Length: 323
Image (cartoon, rainbow, N blue to C red; front, side):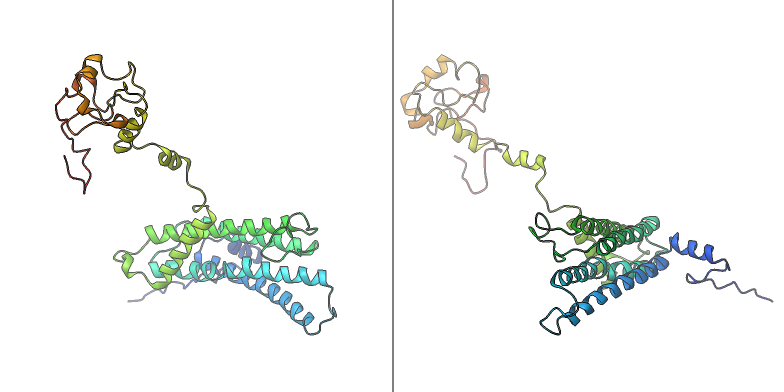
């Protein structure tokens, strides 16, 4: 029986002989392996530029005099080296190259969760690099890669805004990659591949994506306003009773069981007259057998004089005996 062998077509090869179509197939690909290779080539290009800037800096430091460049050019070259190495090499190197290539293979998935978002992250990375390189071509930056103020604000006469814009765009590329990794890890694992069976590399990429997404999306910023309102809201219970007791401290005729803000000034006169002096305590407080300290009970359900107010389950706190 004759068998027909299927053609072996890999992600690196294309059957078309047209050069333009071959370039378009790479620039518009959604294959995670090809996108990882695009990242590899781009990151190596920026690494060579950063290494070239570091080479000029080291050559200048051979002698104390400014043999190769002036002090201002030295500062700009040093900043260029730092910006390229930090923002365009160290941050995206391992997640963008190794993560894109290996994570779907380790998870048993055909591709990442959002292939087009993966391609968009590479284009954002390239646009950010173009902004940073255009700033270097137009004069460079002399503030250092940390962009500390006031060197990067009032006293700077270099292209700070253009360089920061490039780093900002590159940050969106990292956000897109982090979202892709998190969604792929959650939703596209192979059957039987539980969380405790994940490879350590997948765990590392997942944790790095969570930290990077929280850092860049501002999850560590300020407390939401709704939580601030809840934090400022007064608590009911013993605090209300304590405030009610303090409220009636200066008035000997004040009713200690009046609710704050209740119309009519508290208990009816009959209930106020029925209280004995033994039930009144300094500061408007009540004795153990008197009426409640604040008006948490409606007037029609309030216990009479000499009766003990029944305790409710909501009033009892652990560690405090119920009297």
